[in-house]
Structures are given as structure tokens and as C-alpha cells.
Length: 328
Figure 1 (cartoon, helix red, strand yellow):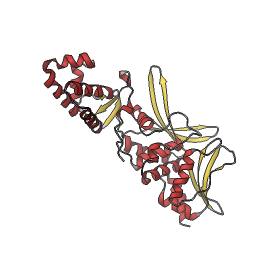
Figure 2 (spheres, helix red, strand yellow):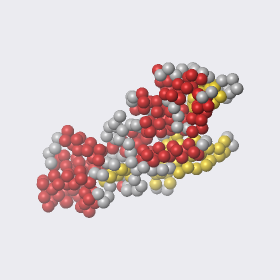
Figure 3 (tube, helix red, strand yellow):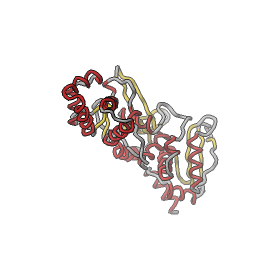
Figure 4 (cartoon, one colour):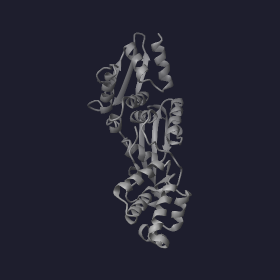
């Protein structure tokens, strides 16, 4: 599933230079715009661009040669300038704007560390989305005069986060840092990725919620509207973050839980219904003993086997438990 042109979702109409999201890979398109404009203005082009766009020739030259990335808003303004003076239609403008989107192979904040951003939905991306909805967090903090954009993922197993980090690298060409943490309630590991382009992509393009989302976890619209394979991958990620599987002396069990105050979260209800559509029947949501969580559950071996066959898991410890249950 291809993602529509999301360049404007990565920037604001007015943004300080040091906060700009910049594009890489568009130099040939910028060069073609400059060539068309030169036919119109000849030797006056440099003065015209500077007077209207406030862009010096040295900067334009670096964009054309691919020496520097171009900020999204500068690319847009240059394209509007081209449309106006080369007498291009709105359709021609949109076609060229989509070419810029398609050619953009890397992104950065003001020329800092480059990352990739997916142009289409895939199973790795929807898995990450599901895991995020279970144990992820977007955080924006101001340090002096600089905004820092971070994405966090939490897990009790360091090995699981290391493998998860491999998926992050495959998607975004960046690896996060893993930290050990503990408090009175327990011990866990945190994976932190610092990147404004990725933060804005997850928040504005994919619809993941920033800040604390406990008791308000929903299903992103893009997941609801996509196909079943991607939805199942989303459920796999959510299960790996918030689910459990095991076996007592009497029965095996599988459950998925989510913190919720009065009624089950939307995501728990949606997951249950989506599994039901695939003949994986889990119980109605029930409160846990501490009344902090709702969970859906099964104690049937065949249902657990079907869940593993259709949804599966990337969590090594859970995979071992699945195999023990299935192979008994």
C-alpha cells in the first residue's frame, strides 16, 4: 500500500532554519526547474529568485549539484515560483511536486543525520506500529533553545529490543540506543531513537499518538483501512508488546491486556473482533484482579495454535512457549 505524498506533514508553514526538514535526491528536479526559469529571466534570474524567495545563488547552486539538501518549504516555494513565471498549470505543479516526493530518498533536520522514511506500508512498518501502540512513546522536549524529538520502545528482554532495533534500521536506516532501567515496580530496557523526521512521520503520517496514551489506546486509521496481512502484522506487534502465552499444570493460556479505567480500550476490542473474523476466538474483555487492566484470553490449545499459525510472533521467548504448547 503506497503512502500519499506526505511532505507537508513533515513541516510547518513557518519554521526556523535550524528546524527545517530537508530532502535528499532531488537535485536533478531542482536543476530542471532552474533551467526552465532561466529561459524566462535569463541573466536576471539570480536577482529575481533572491528578491522573491530570499535564496542566494550559492544556495541554489548547492541544491542543483546535490551538495546540500533542500528544505521542504524551500522546494515548495521554488516550485510555486516556477509555476507562476513558466505559466504552468496546477496539474503540472502537482505532478512535479509528486516527482520531488518520489525522488526524495533521505531526510534530515537541517542537514543533520540522514534517515530514510518509508513510501509504502509494509509488514515491518505495521508491526512496529502495533508494538508502539502497546509499549511505545513519542516525546518532544526542549533543551535550551533546541527541540529534541524522541521515540521510545520498552521491553523486559534486551534481546527482543535488539532484534526490534534491526527492524528499525531496515525501515529508517538508523539504530536507536538501548538502555537498562529499573524502579520499585520492576526492571526493563528502553530503546530510544532521536530523529525529528521519524517522529513527525510516525505522528503525522501514520497517526500514532504523542505523549502519554495509557487508557486511550486506539487503532490508527491507516491500519483500519489497509488489508488483512498488514492488520495481522499490526496485531503481532501489539501482542509482542502487550500479550502473553504460557501453560499451567492444567491448561495452556494466551492473553492480551491493556490498561483501561472504565471500559476496554478501542484497540483491545478491535483486536478481538479482527481475530474473531479469522476464527481465533478470545474471551470478552474482563478486568484483571487489580482492576487496572482489561484482557482478552483463551485456554484452548487449538486456538493458541491457530493464533500462532495466522498471527505468529517475533518475540523469541513467546515463540518458545508457543512451540512447547503446540508440540505437546
